[in-house]
Structures are given as structure tokens and as C-alpha cells.
Length: 261
Image (cartoon, rainbow, N blue to C red):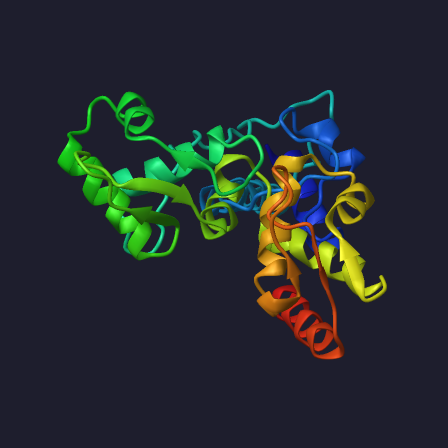
């Protein structure tokens, strides 16, 4: 645990949070090039272990005894505190069921596009929730911009289409990628190109899976004047590409700078 968190600190502090080869050697579920999540509970546990280690060193120095060697363990072995249960994810004012639905949507999406979700799929995925509870949770997500809904005759739950905002917010928790970080890379690639940016060329330049690419691309496109976005004509991407004018370049650069902090 101590080594893993030291490596996590390294990639976050020196590698923009992107898992490198050394980190993947210590984290079994990490994949090279993916964003490393930073969870509050992990930080608290790491702090507990560090404090315990420092306390043992202080006690050793105060006693005047020789330091413990690799072959001679300390009298009181250092025992890491028990792992804590992960805290329930909270997003704004969304209820627990709304958050569960959003995570389920993000996990099941194959392309990270504006998927349609049928009432039957939703009720099957959440059999312990009533229709009224599901309808309320969907309304919460729609109210906060994570879903687009339209009423359907004879259906309790409206027609549902996923908005890019859902992937941007919930992907870091559902599939461990972060569109808000990835979009900075896309902006840099787009600004290095000519006035016309094609989606397939941009996707190829990243080497990312489609599921990771699309939310970040949709996030970037949302910052561009809609009149210059090449919409339609593809089933795999949010748009075919876009044209960039000087004012768009200014907006994109400032947008990426804000995300970089």
C-alpha cells in the first residue's frame, strides 16, 4: 500500500496523472496511458500509514537503539490500518439512485456517445426500484443536464438520451478515464493542425479506444461555435470534425489553460 501510493503521488505530480510503466508494475488494475484516479479515502489511508511509519521512527530515535535491519524486524511491527469502505459517491444534489443510474450508463456505454436508453433496460437493471423512483431519478439527471428526455405516450419513464456531460462527470468513477484531462490533449492536437480538423485523423493521433476518445472530443466540440461543427454523417463519433477560425483557437487555448490550472 505504501509503495503503491508513493508511485501514485509520482504520476500525479510529475506525469499529469497518466499511468506510466513503473506505476502499472505496482497496480494490478492500472493500464499504461490511462488517468490514475485520486480518491479521498486512499489519501486518508496513505496518511495514516505515513504517520504510523514516522511515529515508529521517532520512537526508535528516542530510545537510542540501533535501527531495525531487514533481517531483524522491529519489536512492534508496523501494521497498516484496515482498508476503509469506499465512501458513497456524491455528485451535486443528485440522489443515490440517480448516481447509480449514471454510473451504470457510463459503464455500459460502448462508444461514449449519446446512447438511447429504453424504459425496459432501466427497469431490468434496477429491479429493486419502483417506477416512480426511477422516473424521479431520471428527472434529477435530466434537470442537471446529464440526460436529455422527451415524453412518450403510455410510458411512465420518458425517452432517454445520454448527454456528454454524464460521461465527463462519471467516467472517472465508472471506467477510470477522465475526459476533463483527455480534452486538454485533444485541444493541443487540434491547435497544431490546419483550419479543418477531421475526427478520424484526430482519433488516430491519440491511439485511444473509441470509448475514451468520444467524451473528450464531445467536450472539446462544445467549446466551438456550432456553425463550424461538421455534424452528422457518422455513427461512431459525435461529429465528423470542425473548422477553426482564430477566435476558436483563442477560446480552445484558454479553455485548455483553465483545465490545466
